[in-house]
Image 1: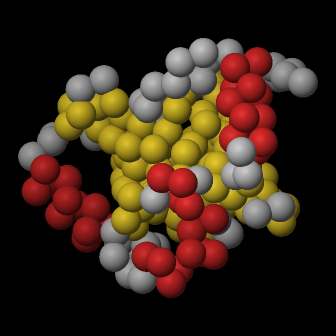
Image 2: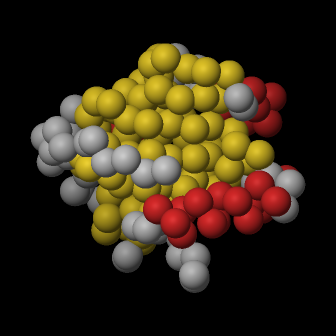
Image 3: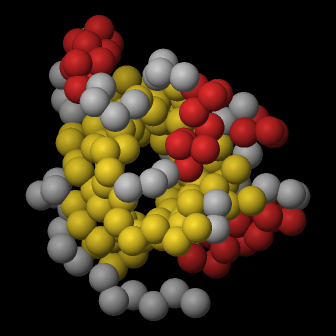
Length: 167
């Protein structure tokens, strides 16, 4: 399996709407996709019932790569444990890998775990505001704690159909 980075994400602090608008204007990219997503999962092993994030996506800034501006608005997330690293400035949140095959997803997760990385956040989405995300599609993702290796975390992203059972 070859690994290909398909997402670059900048994180901003809650209440950063002005920054998001400013950075979008500064970059000059006009086509953005917005989604408010809700998900459940865990943060460093602690169960989370519901976390909410605002996502802004652009596909023109980096050809072939999804550029994301991420703002957590409710619930706990893995960046809260790293407040002293980022202060109030925008930061590289993660680089993401969309993995289409569940076995490959698990294999990559297991290799990272075996190398000493842990899971910073695990999530299963249950609600999207973006009308282009059908009610039949959801996402499972893992934020792998790789900041000590790369200076950023890796996000493994798996798209699945509602009701799909992956073991």
